[in-house]
Image 1: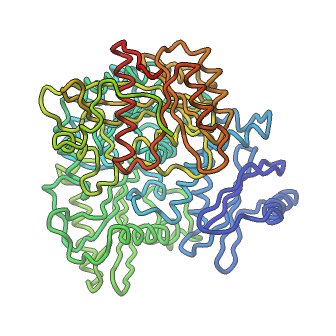
Image 2: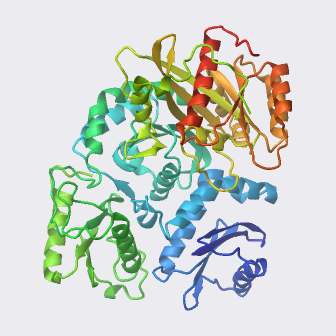
Image 3: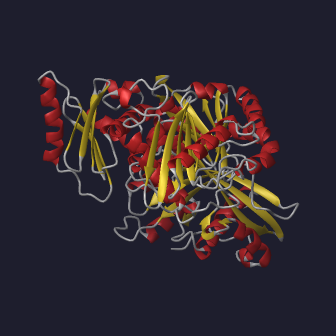
Length: 410
Length: 230
């Protein structure tokens, strides 16, 4: 359960969102949350966060213009993750409205009205605190792009590059089951937050056959809009582009058909990699109930809630949703506190020398293991009752397969 | 609460025949026959070789907040939308397939609904052009709970150069501001067909008559036949 408030630095409320079945935030309380922050500021200090027994409050200012504040009651959350949520919300505001409109406010009532377009995406971000059943991705938590590894990847990249060039853009990607299966080299030069905003927006528009939405890139182009265009190729795959004023959506449909029609069988074959999200000839240890691997250099993550598509795993008493929730909670509990991402300069813990490279957690019905190795962080969910040294050995083998196997490129 | 068009070409009960049923079944998800499938642009329901595919682009207009997104969501089988009113950004295209029999020949209609938000269209010029360009028909959404949505239709009719225009009427349970009689008189005066949105699209009983009438009307116009009832 959470409340999110946004106020201009002059103290005017811009919007309030809430997550969960909770009553609206009373106005005096909104005013107090703002007041205590502003008061601290006048004293030359900055109030970052506070907590009571079961509630966290985090404040953060953006672009010297507005302040976001989140009040959350979820003990598995840390201030690192709540700050991350505030950053995401702020990026969403820039993503839809552009920096100019947020910073040079001419009419506050107009801005309040315009900000409403951000609500669905902001709510999706807040939903990440307690995700809906059908969410399988981890991007909102990790900031990394969720990918799918399929044997057809290099063929797809070839088609995608030709297709993007022919329609005059360098930014394009092919998604299978909402995960990126191939992308143009320039797609990966977009900032993580931009890729994430695009991924979240597309997850909200999954019932459309085609979309053409003007957006701003919060880092690369906060003042000049691009067109985010997507055409659904099959029920489970789509192609997505960032374009300038041309070509039109209708012209793009023709081009999409021209380039991708011949790849229909390949797309169907790539779709069959789901839900393991890796080529079907790669098999993992049966004790791996689900995993999340993050490549911190490439800012991509590979994950699966059902890695054993055909044979099934040893302990199927855990549903996919349950496995996802366990992995998400594990991630939130350890990253930034017990373990740091490789190459990360920001550490959430007080003394970085105490940060470990490995975390084990053993519960009655399952065990968890996290391991940092090279540029990777891997999180694995196991059944209970296995020794830690055995878990370590399986995790190492799994990581090696998922990152070094010839057929498993991502 | 009857639509004001009579079928000219389509056989209204063809979808109930074994051949029709075979295609209609494919419009729904295999594991859930209450959810419409969302086809990509590279695929379509499998049909007998030689079946004609009729693609119809329908530009959807309406006053801001009149319920364009809801209308199209309902028609494409996703009845729940974001709670509360949110302005639509950009262009949203939804494809819907509907099989029908015209003059004893099976046709697969591919209806492409092109929708955009009013304010966003004003901000970005390209949006309304893209939605209306080369469209086979224009649908204006009229919400019976909001009088001004009819005023909007009225003002839009003057500026629209499109010849095939129809009204999609959203019904309401309470506070009806546009009454049946008024609506039919208006439509008659303007020579406009209107179609009531089916109350339950998950039920074929409601969905089929709607799509039959819509496909028949647009098809008739392309074949230069003006329905008698207008």
